[in-house]
Image (cartoon, rainbow, N blue to C red; front, side, top):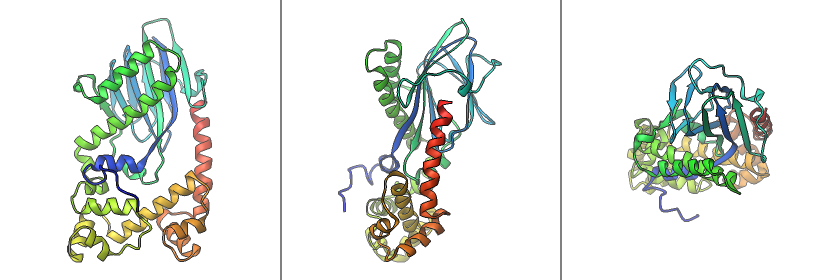
Length: 326
């Protein structure tokens, strides 16, 4: 078994973010002049972020909240819902795919758009959580998360200031600096939400904070192939079998062994979509005696066969890139 990192149980936020992993899919530096506006299409499975470095922006999530952003503010649209950006209320918002935004590399675009009025500069982007368990986290997140410039001099705002400085005085390598700072910023904003919002204390995120059940979840996450039983899980929690079973179900929302199976299938799904492991290899790696038994458990838990998941994920990745680039 791999040695656990120091945050594995004492910091449930660190554990969640470590397990889920994040990768940048699309970044865009925008130079906008009034009047300007655009609509960003729905991109399921992606979290959008928007940072205003100068000027102002109105952001409206379709069917949801509308906020006005000022310099030094960050907004996340966690579930990839369709949303509109505009320099002022009432301005037309054409689909971003109809607005030229040349790609400077395979993930980084430059967008210049609008009239001849006041300027707004922004950094926007879309990121994906690579682990299949991320769906549970995204379901917990609100439709919009806002980090305001007046929230205090925390690390989030230090990163915002660094991004603004890079945008205003772009130097060689600036695109690489901005994308890496943007990734850090998204993690900081999520960490802030996870630490402060009551909604983050539900389900497996909340259970990670429990001193006994959190210890068990961390062990299952780190060693899913172990021959876990309710008895061995209870011993890890230093609890009686019956007390542990009741406490686990109450906090996590499902029985312990159902969670173990589901987590194993998350691990398998992650391997199928991020590598070339065969179904037989995954079956052996996760403690199943036969490929058929593993495939049945996978289909029952995930809702599709291992092969179907791998084909669908590759098709989604291809269409997502095309959707963002227009």
